[in-house]
Length: 272
Image 1 (cartoon, one colour):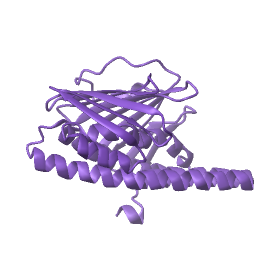
Image 2 (cartoon, rainbow, N blue to C red; image 1 turned 135 degrees about the vertical axis):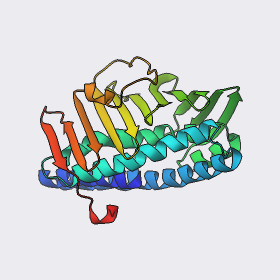
Image 3 (spheres, rainbow, N blue to C red; image 1 turned 90 degrees about the vertical axis):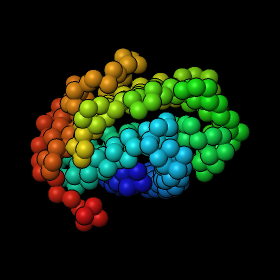
Image 4 (cartoon, helix red, strand yellow; image 1 turned 60 degrees about the horizontal axis):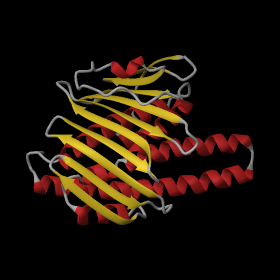
């Protein structure tokens, strides 16, 4: 995830440089440094969650193990797709569309600790500047409440259907602003992340992962989506106005401006 944020934020820096505004460039640099630092801490927390999940349930039976497996699969595909899009002159600026998808991992960090106990999630969230963490587990339902780094009351509640799905709802200061779903399918995973920003702007990200291939859709200004079923087709995110896919070494898609995308993916040196 750190690589994804670094790439997207680097592009943001380039955009500000083009404006020629020194204050804007300084502000962008500050935002970039903070975001990458948060991503680095989140990576450490995610690694810890994966290790704990494996130790507590080698068969992948916990909600933590289920969500960790999805996150790893999604991150691998998204990294390849972002690498290709960010290195293609015609699609370079489209990388901005993926910033929210990357940041969703931060919002859903508590889900990586569902089933592992309060001390585990408290330690992980403390790395992100959270405090007053409480954890509650009843059957297949989990709730994590805390004050975030901005001292806002935050919570994430999840319902886990063992080996099949994880549905989570999040809120800030008592107002619901996150809805997320992950389903295991015959070909891999499908998922969606719906987020309402402080200004009321709503964005929906839809995901389909099949091995090293995947499709990511982006919709803005939409209402909370209908729940997934787990029977969605592998290309279901292509119904979005803006979407990007990687199949083998080919990247296709439709930009926010309605421009068709189709080119060969050539890994950059650091992607090997």
